[in-house]
Each structure stands twice: as structure tokens, then as C-alpha cells.
Amino acid sequence: MEKRVHYYVSRKNVLTWLMALCLVGSAMIRIVFACLKGSGEQLNVWTQIVLPVAATLLYVLIVLLDGKEHLYKTAIPVWLMTFFYAIRPHGFLGNNTMMLALFCVLLFFCGVVYTIVLSGRVSSPWLLLAVFGVGLGVNAWLLHDKGTSLPMLEAFLPEILLFFGCFLLTFAMRVHPGNEYHPTWGDRKDGRLIRTLPAMNMVSPYIMVTRNDSSNLFAESLEITHIDRYIRQKRREGLTNFGIMHVLLAAYCRGVCKFPAINRFIAGQKIYSRGEDIQFCLTVKKEMTVDAPETVLKVHLTPRDTAEDVYKKLQATVENAKNTPLDSGMDNTAGVLSMIPGVVLKFVVWLLKTLDYFSLLPRFILEVSPFHGSVFLTSMGSLGIQPIYHHLYNFGNLPVFGSFGCKRRTVEVLEDGTVVQRKYVDCKFVLDERITDGYTYAAFFKHYRRILARPEQLDNPPEEVLKDID
Image 1 (tube, one colour):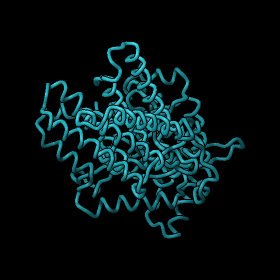
Image 2 (cartoon, one colour):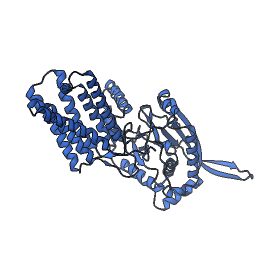
Image 3 (cartoon, one colour):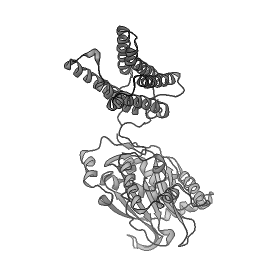
């Protein structure tokens, strides 16, 4: 994975608050001087007052509210200020076209430097000291050279406070220790953008646009003699409701340890990795009757979870759903949507799809949505039927839907002529082929079968968890 640094600032650092004070002061001074002068032309108000004030306050908000993880987003208000400086009148440059062009090139260069540094491609923020230091020095010199009259204070005092605050913030910036990945440009709230895929993998989501266009069907029959023995053992150990669902899911998590590409998803025609967050979705009924209500639950698992970890997380979520009124986050969200008139609801769903495409859906919607996750696994055996091929959803980003049926017995003849009776469970999966290649899928399911042949290995954490490519 590409080595990057991740800068952050802490609200506990006094320099962070001094920066905020300076930038808020800069914005207030712009507003005060604008009130003293009068509103002026509408275009001038928007470009010379509203734009810099909004950019300055946005910078402060990002630093204070999200500076721990998403400090790189401050590049957005920096580029807004770059645009402001490019279009504002520059009396000290006169009408020299060449000087104005060079000034705009310098502004663009400063914006690029800031973006590159905050993206983590530079291991030292000293370049920002130069950018903000030069800006501070030039404005302070111009104010001293041209005097401290009211027009000069209006022109240079807000800029001095702005650059001084950003200069202070540079000293407050720290680098996250360790090798843990932190989000950067292009990443989503629920995944990391894969940037080093082969060209064909990057193009295929634009050719096969929807999941149902790119679904592969896979069927497997699992011999469960060892699994049944393992389930009985776990129940004797006190896991009274331990069943085949827990074994299949724990084995899936263990498979992700070796094949992390399985935990990818497609969003906005790009491929993302969930890393070690395996989001498992399932549907549960409060009672096994036709008219009993059902709800969709989501459980966060990791590749490091043992079978007991999976059991405890899943059991806690299911028991909570069965022992409380049907008011899960998804039920509440669906209830609100159901009250919207049909024509308007169609527009709302389109809007949600559009926001999801551009990674603008709020995190709470991603959390309650059963259409956003790693894998949906359902038990047809509890209904007394064999598994089905369940379609994928074109809404959301769920790439794998699996089902397993009821147990069946077969009589087989071995090579030596011995007749034996064996017990099987059939599984069927619908897979989004765009997230990885067929070789990886095949290798994953062969590894999955080997894990289930010796399920006792699920009692211990994995020795190694591989990371997906950059």
C-alpha cells in the first residue's frame, strides 16, 4: 500500500483555537468594513465579501469539527480563497497583464502545494510555512508601506489575520503515528478507494453499470459432518443458540483474512475496499408465522473475529430486535419514506441514489440501510426449503448475497465400494463480478470450503490478516 502521512490537528491545542480566533476576526473585519462602505454592487458583494467570509468560516469549521480525520478537506476553502484572490482588484499590480498572469500562476501553485501536503504526499509541512509566511509578510509589508488609513486597513488587515492564523495552524499540525490508514481524497465514509487496479477493472463498472448486469451465480454443496460435531461442541460450551449460520459467517470472515478483495464494493462506478469492516446484513422475523413482522439488521464484524465473537455479536443484535418493538433504524427510515406521496417518493429515491453516487449520503443512512454492506446471508433452511439465487440490489453497494438451505442426506459409494450416508447443506451466492476477478472468487471459495472442513480453527484468531491493495 502506498505510504502516506496523515496530518491532523487537535482541539486541545491552543494554537488551533488561536487560528480560529484569527480567522473569525478576519471574517468579522470584512463584514464590518463592508457595512461601513455600504453594500455596493451585487456582484461585488458576492465575490469580495460573501466568498472570502464563507471560505474563511468553512475553514474554521472543518478544522474544529473534523480536523482529527479529515483535515485534508480544508483544501476546499483554500481553493475558494485562491479564486477570490485571483478575481479581486490588485491596485499594487497596476494594469500590467504579465504581472497579473504571474500572480494567478503563483496562486494556483500555492493551492496545489497546500492540497498535495494535506493529502499526505509530503512528509513535512514546512512548505505550508513558506506559503503562509510569504502571504503574511507581503500583506504586512504593504500595510506598512502604504500607511494605516481606513482603506489600507480594509485591504490588508483581514489578509494579515487570515495568513497569521493559518501560519499558526501549521505548527499545530501533527502526523498520526503507526501504519493505520486514514481517509483522503476520493475515499467514502464507508470505504477506501482502490487506486492501483488494472485498467480493465476500472473501466468495467462503466460498461456493466448495474449489479444485476454483472451478477455471477455460484452454487456449492457443503458436507457438514464436521460442522455438526462442531456445533454440538459449542452448544455444550454454553453457546446454546449456536448454529450453522454462525459457522458459515465466521468462515466468511476468516476467508476475508486471506482474500480482502472480497470485501470490496462498487459505488459511483469506482471500486472501494471496506478494509476490516465486514458489514453483515440479515432479515429476522419476530415469530415464525406468515403474518409476523420482520426487520433487517446489520452487524459489524472483522476478519479477526472468532466463531464465538461472531456468535455474541449476532446473538446480541438478533435478541435485541426480537425483544423490543419493531423500531430498528431501517424500520423508522422506511416508515418516514412510506408517508411521502408516490410521485415525490420516486424523486426522493432518485435523490438518494444521486447522493450515494457522489458519496454524499449521511453516515446514519449508510448505517441503517440494508442495501449498503459486505454480504447479505439468509437461511432458507429455517423456512424448510432449499436455497435460492437472490438478486443483488441496484440501490446501495452490497456485492454478495448468499443463502443456504435445509440439511439433506445422500447415500454415496466410495472408491472401495463402501456405501456411506452423508449430510449436506447447499449454498448459493450471487456475486458482483466487477469487484475482483474470477480467480480470486474461485480461490476464496476453495479456501472457504477448506475452513468449513475443519471448523475448529475458527476458535482462534487468525495468524495474519492481509490488507487490500492501495
